Length: 139
Image (cartoon, rainbow, N blue to C red):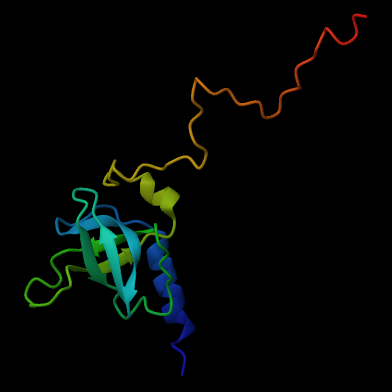
């Protein structure tokens, strides 16, 4: 039997709005990829060492996480256990624009433009008229 729709809607609503502040043991991380059944490899802005985190059951089959997306990770969730997991996903960033406005958003995760910066050496000729040759009509 499928879970009740109210649970799905409550989970979706929870992920839309960012919290007012973060706890000391919470951090925003970028998803590098899925590593198996509900396990994700994420990177924190402070260090480039990837962490293996688990997706809790309330998000499973309800919220999808894509590579390059952002999640809120609790890094102290599995300290008492002796396993390979480094943390647990607490929230999934779905409305990235709203989350970026918060003061706790890490500056290392700046939004990159989808267009490469124009260099001064190679000037683009896209949208310009072709050069005219004055020597053709001079006979």
